[in-house]
Length: 316
Image 1 (cartoon, rainbow, N blue to C red):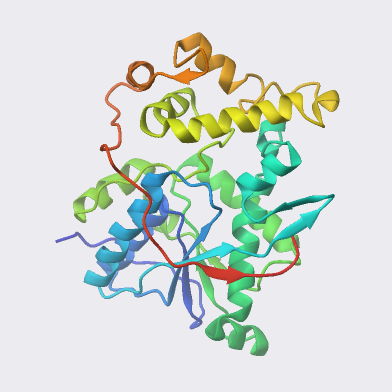
Image 2 (cartoon, rainbow, N blue to C red):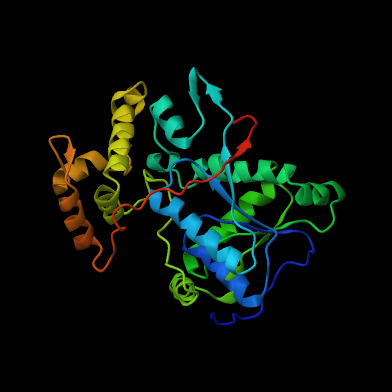
């Protein structure tokens, strides 16, 4: 049994209700809150960039079971499957994008705006919505516009993110004309409260959803990646190496690696996680627990969920 939240403040529209689901704490908390209030979304959509950690993919199956048990639609998983050809390179995932261009995500260069998220998540969802009949009908008439739910919690940092997102969205001609709703802020749910509500609903609290090579990762998350998914950390090292030694290396003046001001590879060598080109998982666990006391490591054998993807086409 789950407790009842405060009343919601949904925008004044009878259009379809859409939850942008990221597989992390905040968007999961929205669905828990909706279950408490008897609100049923019309669409729960997850944009797969092709670089999430296995634990995130596995959590999608857990959520699908929970959603079905609470009378909600399961997660619609969309992914960019058009092959992008640009400047002699070919790719259709963010990982392939970085490797083919011998570059790193924009945030590694000190840019605060996550253009990778716009390209690989926001644009993919926008394209899906333009073809999704309930939304397309609303766009055509301009009446009862869809309400898109965004998982920003009620912390000062996320309120600032909301202001930036609203400001950017108001000038972005590529965005669908949806009405944005931030339920967690209406309910006053901080990150800690979101985690408490998720646990009270009988769900495991999910890990942070992010690309395994995200430059915004904290040091303990790099160590955790080495402990849980050393093959992915090796891919991150490879990506970093290509950027630092490849065709753009002569331009590089400030970016030292995936950490912007530092190299993941060098840091892991300094910590003893990487020795003679091999990742020491036990040492990675030690570093992780030292940097994040009380944190957990994923159960052995946790693998990505099997899922069906929907094709999204169009120019990059």
